[in-house]
Amino acid sequence: MRIYEVFLKRPGRDEFRHAGSIEAADDELALVLARENYARRAEGDRLWLVDRDNLVVGDGEFVAPNADKPHRHNDGSRVAERRQRLREENA
Amino acid sequence: MRRRWTDLSDFEAFLDKGGIVEADDDMPDAYRQEVFRFIEMHANSELMGGLTERDWIPRTPGLRHKMAVLAKTQDEIGHGHLLYMVAADLGVKTRAEMLEDLFAGKSRFHNVFHYRAVTWGDQIAIAFLVDAAALATQQAVFKNCSYGPYRRILKRIITEEGFHMRFGEERVLRVAEGTEFQRAMFQDSLDRWWWPAMQLFGPDSKPDDVLMRWHIKSERNEVLRDRWVQKFVPLLHGYGFTIPDPDLAWDEEAGRWSIGEIDWEPLKRTLRQGGPDSARRIGEAAANWSETRWVREALDRVAEQREAA
Ligand SMILES: [Fe+2]
Ligand SMILES: [Fe+2]
Image 1 (cartoon, chains in turn purple, cyan):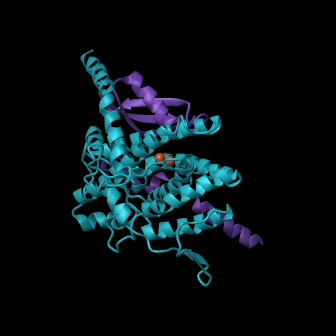
Image 2 (spheres, rainbow over the protein chains, first blue to last red; image 1 turned 135 degrees about the vertical axis):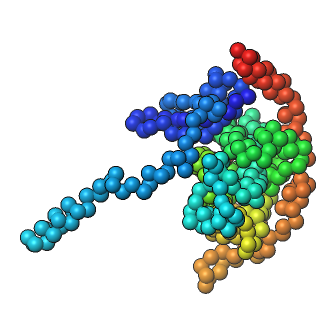
Protein backbone atom coordinates (compact mmCIF):
# COMPACT_ATOMS: atom_id res chain seq x y z
CA MET A 1 0.00 0.00 0.00
CA ARG A 2 1.12 3.53 -0.74
CA ILE A 3 0.31 6.88 0.69
CA TYR A 4 -0.64 9.59 -1.78
CA GLU A 5 -0.87 13.30 -1.14
CA VAL A 6 -4.04 14.66 -2.72
CA PHE A 7 -4.22 18.02 -4.48
CA LEU A 8 -7.59 19.29 -5.59
CA LYS A 9 -8.42 22.12 -7.93
CA ARG A 10 -11.73 23.92 -7.79
CA PRO A 11 -13.27 24.78 -11.17
CA GLY A 12 -12.21 28.17 -12.46
CA ARG A 13 -9.19 30.25 -11.62
CA ASP A 14 -8.10 28.79 -8.30
CA GLU A 15 -4.82 26.97 -7.96
CA PHE A 16 -4.41 23.34 -6.93
CA ARG A 17 -4.57 22.97 -3.17
CA HIS A 18 -3.43 20.27 -0.84
CA ALA A 19 -6.55 18.50 0.42
CA GLY A 20 -5.05 15.67 2.50
CA SER A 21 -3.79 12.17 1.93
CA ILE A 22 -5.09 8.68 1.23
CA GLU A 23 -3.68 5.17 1.24
CA ALA A 24 -4.23 2.91 -1.76
CA ALA A 25 -2.89 -0.17 -3.50
CA ASP A 26 -2.28 1.49 -6.87
CA ASP A 27 -2.77 4.71 -8.83
CA GLU A 28 -6.16 3.76 -10.24
CA LEU A 29 -7.64 2.90 -6.84
CA ALA A 30 -5.99 5.96 -5.35
CA LEU A 31 -7.86 8.18 -7.81
CA VAL A 32 -11.19 6.55 -6.95
CA LEU A 33 -10.56 6.89 -3.23
CA ALA A 34 -9.42 10.48 -3.58
CA ARG A 35 -12.54 11.38 -5.52
CA GLU A 36 -14.82 9.64 -3.02
CA ASN A 37 -13.08 11.18 -0.03
CA TYR A 38 -12.35 14.70 -1.19
CA ALA A 39 -14.79 15.58 -3.96
CA ARG A 40 -18.13 13.99 -3.01
CA ARG A 41 -19.90 17.30 -3.53
CA ALA A 42 -17.99 18.45 -6.61
CA GLU A 43 -15.50 20.46 -4.52
CA GLY A 44 -13.14 20.28 -7.49
CA ASP A 45 -12.81 19.17 -11.08
CA ARG A 46 -9.12 18.15 -11.19
CA LEU A 47 -7.04 15.91 -8.96
CA TRP A 48 -3.29 15.53 -8.66
CA LEU A 49 -2.05 12.60 -6.65
CA VAL A 50 1.58 12.38 -5.63
CA ASP A 51 3.11 9.29 -4.12
CA ARG A 52 4.43 10.58 -0.80
CA ASP A 53 7.78 8.88 -1.40
CA ASN A 54 8.25 11.08 -4.46
CA LEU A 55 7.66 14.41 -2.73
CA VAL A 56 10.63 16.76 -2.63
CA VAL A 57 10.28 18.70 0.59
CA GLY A 58 11.80 22.03 1.53
CA ASP A 59 11.56 22.61 5.27
CA GLY A 60 11.16 25.87 7.17
CA GLU A 61 14.85 26.39 7.74
CA PHE A 62 15.55 26.17 4.02
CA VAL A 63 12.52 28.09 2.76
CA ALA A 64 11.90 30.74 5.40
CA PRO A 65 15.18 32.79 5.56
CA ASN A 66 13.76 35.15 2.94
CA ALA A 67 11.42 36.60 5.56
CA ASP A 68 14.16 39.13 6.46
CA LYS A 69 14.58 40.84 3.08
CA PRO A 70 12.51 44.01 3.14
CA HIS A 71 14.42 45.40 0.14
CA ARG A 72 12.48 42.90 -1.97
CA HIS A 73 9.24 44.68 -1.13
CA ASN A 74 7.94 48.19 -1.58
CA ASP A 75 4.76 49.21 0.17
CA GLY A 76 4.58 52.60 -1.57
CA SER A 77 4.51 54.50 1.71
CA ARG A 78 7.03 57.23 0.77
CA VAL A 79 5.09 58.25 -2.31
CA ALA A 80 1.79 58.00 -0.45
CA GLU A 81 3.15 60.32 2.26
CA ARG A 82 4.03 62.96 -0.30
CA ARG A 83 0.61 62.71 -1.95
CA GLN A 84 -1.05 63.04 1.42
CA ARG A 85 1.10 66.14 2.21
CA LEU A 86 0.21 67.76 -1.10
CA ARG A 87 -3.50 67.09 -0.53
CA GLU A 88 -3.32 68.68 2.90
CA GLU A 89 -1.39 71.72 1.56
CA ASN A 90 -3.97 72.24 -1.19
CA ALA A 91 -6.94 71.78 1.11
CA MET B 1 16.29 19.45 9.55
CA ARG B 2 13.14 18.74 11.52
CA ARG B 3 11.89 21.58 13.63
CA ARG B 4 12.66 20.97 17.27
CA TRP B 5 12.28 22.74 20.57
CA THR B 6 14.80 22.86 23.40
CA ASP B 7 12.28 21.77 26.04
CA LEU B 8 8.59 21.71 26.88
CA SER B 9 8.45 25.34 28.00
CA ASP B 10 10.10 26.44 24.75
CA PHE B 11 7.47 24.39 22.89
CA GLU B 12 4.62 25.85 24.97
CA ALA B 13 5.87 29.38 24.31
CA PHE B 14 5.75 28.54 20.58
CA LEU B 15 2.15 27.30 20.96
CA ASP B 16 1.12 30.35 23.01
CA LYS B 17 2.30 32.60 20.20
CA GLY B 18 -0.08 30.78 17.84
CA GLY B 19 2.53 28.35 16.47
CA ILE B 20 1.22 25.50 14.30
CA VAL B 21 2.79 22.06 14.62
CA GLU B 22 3.25 19.91 11.50
CA ALA B 23 3.52 16.13 11.22
CA ASP B 24 7.26 16.15 10.45
CA ASP B 25 8.15 18.36 13.43
CA ASP B 26 10.07 16.90 16.33
CA MET B 27 7.28 17.64 18.79
CA PRO B 28 7.47 16.67 22.48
CA ASP B 29 6.29 13.12 22.96
CA ALA B 30 3.60 14.06 25.49
CA TYR B 31 2.04 16.42 22.92
CA ARG B 32 2.27 13.77 20.20
CA GLN B 33 0.51 11.22 22.41
CA GLU B 34 -2.22 13.63 23.47
CA VAL B 35 -2.98 14.79 19.91
CA PHE B 36 -2.92 11.22 18.71
CA ARG B 37 -5.35 10.02 21.40
CA PHE B 38 -7.70 12.85 20.59
CA ILE B 39 -7.71 12.25 16.83
CA GLU B 40 -7.92 8.48 17.23
CA MET B 41 -11.04 8.83 19.36
CA HIS B 42 -12.54 11.24 16.84
CA ALA B 43 -11.78 8.84 13.98
CA ASN B 44 -13.28 5.89 15.88
CA SER B 45 -16.42 7.90 16.59
CA GLU B 46 -16.86 8.80 12.92
CA LEU B 47 -16.52 5.18 11.90
CA MET B 48 -18.89 3.84 14.58
CA GLY B 49 -21.36 6.65 13.79
CA GLY B 50 -21.15 5.80 10.10
CA LEU B 51 -22.00 2.17 10.82
CA THR B 52 -25.14 3.21 12.74
CA GLU B 53 -26.12 5.44 9.89
CA ARG B 54 -25.62 2.60 7.43
CA ASP B 55 -28.05 0.43 9.41
CA TRP B 56 -30.72 3.02 8.72
CA ILE B 57 -30.36 3.25 4.93
CA PRO B 58 -33.04 0.60 4.21
CA ARG B 59 -35.34 1.81 6.99
CA THR B 60 -35.32 5.55 6.33
CA PRO B 61 -38.77 6.79 5.25
CA GLY B 62 -39.02 8.68 1.95
CA LEU B 63 -36.62 8.59 -0.99
CA ARG B 64 -35.12 12.04 -0.40
CA HIS B 65 -34.23 11.28 3.19
CA LYS B 66 -33.07 7.78 2.31
CA MET B 67 -30.63 9.26 -0.19
CA ALA B 68 -29.52 11.82 2.39
CA VAL B 69 -28.84 9.03 4.90
CA LEU B 70 -26.82 7.23 2.23
CA ALA B 71 -24.81 10.42 1.70
CA LYS B 72 -24.36 10.89 5.44
CA THR B 73 -23.07 7.34 5.76
CA GLN B 74 -20.49 8.07 3.06
CA ASP B 75 -19.56 11.29 4.87
CA GLU B 76 -19.04 9.64 8.24
CA ILE B 77 -16.99 6.77 6.82
CA GLY B 78 -15.06 9.36 4.81
CA HIS B 79 -14.40 11.41 7.95
CA GLY B 80 -13.10 8.30 9.65
CA HIS B 81 -10.89 7.59 6.66
CA LEU B 82 -9.33 11.06 6.61
CA LEU B 83 -8.84 11.17 10.36
CA TYR B 84 -7.16 7.76 10.45
CA MET B 85 -4.68 9.07 7.85
CA VAL B 86 -3.93 12.12 9.99
CA ALA B 87 -3.64 10.00 13.15
CA ALA B 88 -1.40 7.41 11.49
CA ASP B 89 1.03 10.15 10.38
CA LEU B 90 1.78 10.81 14.06
CA GLY B 91 3.56 7.46 14.08
CA VAL B 92 2.00 6.16 17.30
CA LYS B 93 -0.11 3.40 15.71
CA THR B 94 -0.75 2.36 12.13
CA ARG B 95 -4.26 2.57 10.74
CA ALA B 96 -4.63 -1.21 10.94
CA GLU B 97 -3.55 -1.15 14.60
CA MET B 98 -6.11 1.53 15.39
CA LEU B 99 -8.88 -0.45 13.73
CA GLU B 100 -7.86 -3.69 15.39
CA ASP B 101 -7.80 -2.03 18.81
CA LEU B 102 -11.22 -0.55 18.16
CA PHE B 103 -12.74 -3.86 17.14
CA ALA B 104 -11.08 -5.61 20.09
CA GLY B 105 -12.89 -3.17 22.41
CA LYS B 106 -9.64 -1.53 23.53
CA SER B 107 -10.32 1.97 22.20
CA ARG B 108 -12.70 4.75 23.00
CA PHE B 109 -15.38 6.30 20.84
CA HIS B 110 -18.13 8.81 21.61
CA ASN B 111 -20.63 7.79 24.29
CA VAL B 112 -23.63 8.30 22.00
CA PHE B 113 -22.56 5.44 19.76
CA HIS B 114 -22.86 3.03 22.69
CA TYR B 115 -26.66 3.32 22.52
CA ARG B 116 -29.02 1.71 20.07
CA ALA B 117 -31.07 3.76 17.62
CA VAL B 118 -34.36 1.86 17.81
CA THR B 119 -36.83 4.14 16.03
CA TRP B 120 -36.68 6.69 13.22
CA GLY B 121 -37.24 9.24 16.00
CA ASP B 122 -33.88 8.17 17.44
CA GLN B 123 -32.20 8.83 14.12
CA ILE B 124 -33.77 12.29 14.07
CA ALA B 125 -32.60 12.94 17.62
CA ILE B 126 -29.09 11.82 16.66
CA ALA B 127 -28.94 14.08 13.61
CA PHE B 128 -30.51 17.01 15.47
CA LEU B 129 -28.94 16.81 18.92
CA VAL B 130 -25.85 14.66 18.59
CA ASP B 131 -24.52 15.94 15.27
CA ALA B 132 -25.01 19.46 16.60
CA ALA B 133 -23.17 18.67 19.83
CA ALA B 134 -20.33 16.97 17.96
CA LEU B 135 -20.20 19.88 15.54
CA ALA B 136 -19.92 22.36 18.42
CA THR B 137 -16.96 20.47 19.90
CA GLN B 138 -15.29 20.18 16.49
CA GLN B 139 -15.72 23.88 15.81
CA ALA B 140 -14.10 24.66 19.14
CA VAL B 141 -11.09 22.58 18.10
CA PHE B 142 -11.00 23.99 14.57
CA LYS B 143 -10.99 27.57 15.82
CA ASN B 144 -7.52 27.45 17.24
CA CYS B 145 -6.03 23.97 16.97
CA SER B 146 -2.24 23.94 17.17
CA TYR B 147 -1.88 20.70 15.19
CA GLY B 148 -1.98 21.79 11.55
CA PRO B 149 -2.98 18.57 9.74
CA TYR B 150 -5.92 18.01 12.10
CA ARG B 151 -7.14 21.58 11.81
CA ARG B 152 -7.03 21.48 8.01
CA ILE B 153 -8.98 18.23 7.77
CA LEU B 154 -11.54 19.49 10.32
CA LYS B 155 -12.53 22.23 7.93
CA ARG B 156 -13.96 19.71 5.48
CA ILE B 157 -15.52 17.61 8.23
CA ILE B 158 -17.27 20.59 9.79
CA THR B 159 -18.76 21.65 6.48
CA GLU B 160 -20.25 18.19 6.03
CA GLU B 161 -21.48 17.92 9.63
CA GLY B 162 -23.43 21.10 8.87
CA PHE B 163 -25.40 19.20 6.20
CA HIS B 164 -26.20 16.45 8.70
CA MET B 165 -27.38 18.92 11.29
CA ARG B 166 -29.60 20.75 8.82
CA PHE B 167 -31.19 17.47 7.74
CA GLY B 168 -31.80 16.81 11.43
CA GLU B 169 -33.44 20.21 11.84
CA GLU B 170 -35.66 19.61 8.84
CA ARG B 171 -36.72 16.20 10.16
CA VAL B 172 -37.56 17.64 13.56
CA LEU B 173 -39.70 20.25 11.85
CA ARG B 174 -41.41 17.52 9.86
CA VAL B 175 -42.32 15.44 12.92
CA ALA B 176 -43.21 18.51 14.97
CA GLU B 177 -45.76 19.46 12.33
CA GLY B 178 -46.76 15.82 11.85
CA THR B 179 -49.25 13.43 13.40
CA GLU B 180 -49.72 12.73 17.10
CA PHE B 181 -47.91 9.45 16.55
CA GLN B 182 -44.89 11.20 15.03
CA ARG B 183 -44.77 13.76 17.82
CA ALA B 184 -44.94 11.05 20.47
CA MET B 185 -42.23 9.08 18.69
CA PHE B 186 -39.85 12.04 18.71
CA GLN B 187 -40.67 12.95 22.31
CA ASP B 188 -39.80 9.40 23.33
CA SER B 189 -36.47 9.68 21.46
CA LEU B 190 -35.74 13.05 23.00
CA ASP B 191 -36.33 11.56 26.45
CA ARG B 192 -33.67 8.94 25.76
CA TRP B 193 -31.10 11.02 23.83
CA TRP B 194 -31.11 14.29 25.73
CA TRP B 195 -28.77 13.21 28.50
CA PRO B 196 -26.31 11.25 26.33
CA ALA B 197 -26.05 14.36 24.12
CA MET B 198 -25.31 16.51 27.19
CA GLN B 199 -22.70 14.01 28.38
CA LEU B 200 -21.03 14.02 24.96
CA PHE B 201 -19.33 17.31 25.84
CA GLY B 202 -17.59 15.54 28.73
CA PRO B 203 -17.31 16.54 32.40
CA ASP B 204 -16.37 20.13 33.19
CA SER B 205 -12.79 20.81 32.03
CA LYS B 206 -10.10 20.70 34.69
CA PRO B 207 -8.24 23.99 35.28
CA ASP B 208 -4.96 22.42 34.10
CA ASP B 209 -6.42 20.58 31.06
CA VAL B 210 -3.47 19.92 28.75
CA LEU B 211 -5.76 19.97 25.72
CA MET B 212 -6.44 23.62 26.51
CA ARG B 213 -2.86 24.41 27.50
CA TRP B 214 -1.53 23.02 24.22
CA HIS B 215 -4.19 24.79 22.16
CA ILE B 216 -5.79 21.62 20.91
CA LYS B 217 -9.19 22.60 22.29
CA SER B 218 -10.00 26.27 22.58
CA GLU B 219 -13.06 26.08 24.79
CA ARG B 220 -13.96 24.38 28.00
CA ASN B 221 -16.44 21.49 27.95
CA GLU B 222 -18.92 23.23 30.24
CA VAL B 223 -18.89 26.37 28.11
CA LEU B 224 -19.70 24.41 24.96
CA ARG B 225 -22.41 22.45 26.75
CA ASP B 226 -24.00 25.59 28.12
CA ARG B 227 -24.05 27.29 24.72
CA TRP B 228 -25.71 24.19 23.27
CA VAL B 229 -28.32 24.17 26.06
CA GLN B 230 -29.13 27.84 25.49
CA LYS B 231 -29.70 27.12 21.82
CA PHE B 232 -31.58 23.82 21.99
CA VAL B 233 -33.93 24.37 24.92
CA PRO B 234 -35.85 27.20 23.23
CA LEU B 235 -35.76 25.37 19.87
CA LEU B 236 -37.31 22.22 21.32
CA HIS B 237 -39.80 24.14 23.43
CA GLY B 238 -40.73 26.11 20.33
CA TYR B 239 -41.66 22.87 18.59
CA GLY B 240 -43.75 21.91 21.61
CA PHE B 241 -41.51 19.16 23.00
CA THR B 242 -40.56 18.75 26.63
CA ILE B 243 -37.04 18.23 27.94
CA PRO B 244 -36.45 15.33 30.33
CA ASP B 245 -34.79 17.42 33.03
CA PRO B 246 -37.03 18.19 36.01
CA ASP B 247 -34.55 20.79 37.26
CA LEU B 248 -34.38 22.70 34.00
CA ALA B 249 -35.24 26.30 34.86
CA TRP B 250 -35.23 29.73 33.31
CA ASP B 251 -33.03 32.05 35.33
CA GLU B 252 -34.76 35.39 34.93
CA GLU B 253 -31.85 37.39 36.31
CA ALA B 254 -29.14 35.81 34.19
CA GLY B 255 -31.45 35.51 31.20
CA ARG B 256 -30.50 31.89 30.62
CA TRP B 257 -31.48 28.29 31.12
CA SER B 258 -29.94 26.35 33.95
CA ILE B 259 -29.91 22.58 33.93
CA GLY B 260 -30.08 19.86 36.56
CA GLU B 261 -27.08 17.92 37.73
CA ILE B 262 -25.60 15.51 35.18
CA ASP B 263 -25.18 11.88 36.21
CA TRP B 264 -21.75 10.86 34.88
CA GLU B 265 -22.12 7.14 35.55
CA PRO B 266 -23.62 6.36 32.10
CA LEU B 267 -20.69 8.15 30.42
CA LYS B 268 -18.15 6.24 32.51
CA ARG B 269 -19.82 2.97 31.55
CA THR B 270 -19.51 3.79 27.85
CA LEU B 271 -15.81 4.57 28.32
CA ARG B 272 -15.40 1.02 29.63
CA GLN B 273 -17.38 -0.35 26.63
CA GLY B 274 -20.20 -1.11 29.07
CA GLY B 275 -22.92 0.97 27.43
CA PRO B 276 -26.33 -0.53 26.64
CA ASP B 277 -25.35 -1.35 23.04
CA SER B 278 -21.52 -1.41 23.24
CA ALA B 279 -21.08 -5.16 22.91
CA ARG B 280 -23.38 -5.53 19.90
CA ARG B 281 -21.90 -2.55 18.10
CA ILE B 282 -18.30 -3.51 18.62
CA GLY B 283 -19.11 -7.13 17.81
CA GLU B 284 -20.80 -6.22 14.52
CA ALA B 285 -18.00 -3.88 13.50
CA ALA B 286 -15.44 -6.57 14.34
CA ALA B 287 -17.40 -9.13 12.30
CA ASN B 288 -17.46 -6.75 9.31
CA TRP B 289 -13.73 -6.28 9.66
CA SER B 290 -13.01 -10.00 9.57
CA GLU B 291 -15.54 -10.69 6.80
CA THR B 292 -13.78 -8.15 4.59
CA ARG B 293 -10.31 -9.54 5.16
CA TRP B 294 -10.31 -10.94 1.61
CA VAL B 295 -10.67 -7.40 0.21
CA ARG B 296 -7.61 -6.21 2.11
CA GLU B 297 -5.67 -9.27 1.03
CA ALA B 298 -6.64 -8.70 -2.60
CA LEU B 299 -5.49 -5.09 -2.32
CA ASP B 300 -2.20 -6.19 -0.81
CA ARG B 301 -1.67 -8.45 -3.82
CA VAL B 302 -2.39 -5.54 -6.16
CA ALA B 303 0.22 -3.52 -4.30
CA GLU B 304 2.76 -6.37 -4.46
CA GLN B 305 2.23 -6.77 -8.19
CA ARG B 306 2.77 -3.08 -8.64
CA GLU B 307 6.00 -3.17 -6.67
CA ALA B 308 7.20 -6.14 -8.73
CA ALA B 309 6.36 -4.49 -12.08
FE1 LIG C 1 -18.77 13.05 10.77
FE1 LIG D 1 -22.27 13.68 11.14
